[in-house]
Image (tube, rainbow, N blue to C red; front, top):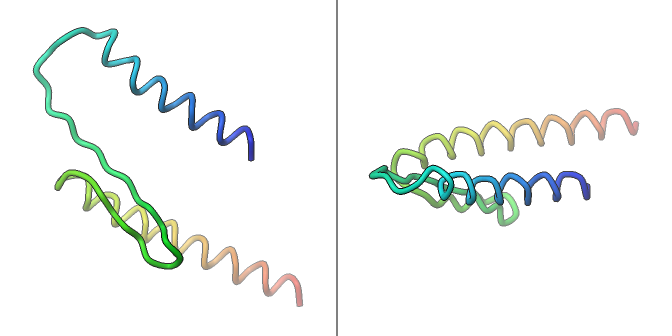
Length: 76
């Protein structure tokens, strides 16, 4: 668990530092994120990214449901 947190911090730090090292240039910034509140996703981001975030969220929610079902079946 702690390793995943450290990897997350490292990725965030690199994503902030890398554009600063490249210098100033005109570019379009896009981004997004998903916040899961219980079974309800709150998806934020630019228009282009939101579609991909919806698909990714649905995929991961389905995977998690399958994992929970398999764990329940293994416990029986």
